[in-house]
Length: 114
Length: 115
Image: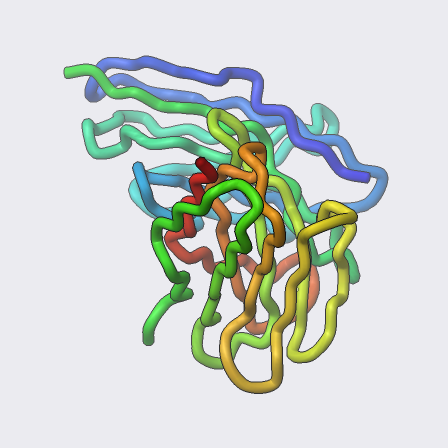
């Protein structure tokens, strides 16, 4: 069975500062990895995904993430955040072909201060 | 192309009543997933359906909860005899393909409050 751990429940940063949201996963099979963002009272929107190939994945809104198989991590980064990035961020894993469901982490609340 | 549509957005039920949550997937999507989000928690998988079939219901509570995705019409998540602990946001997601590499498209959720 897969599991996802998001190490920080809340991350406050100042506007234009860099940010990293941490995600570690466990799985006995090859995985696909995802980051989703949830704005207040809305559903989840896909930020980026790792399926195969290059371990550095670029997504929307200037976010990127790096897949590290040896450390079983998939940390999300942005070099300079904006007020509009304030949201909840979820890391998720699926277990490859034939295992369709996504398993989510607990979420990290990113708060951007002016 | 309309996204995943969920209704109602907000639903209030008294203890013991039934709650019906509806989800219309994106056009062309035949795979539907239901997730539950409790306050201050992540999303927990409930059930995965294809048209007329339940594929994986490993996250569904054994009693009072059921789901369907008929040949025609939306997917329905039904909760009978609701209790306060059922208060949560329920999200539906759809995808066009099976397989874990197909990203899910989420609706805006139904927020159920049990009084």
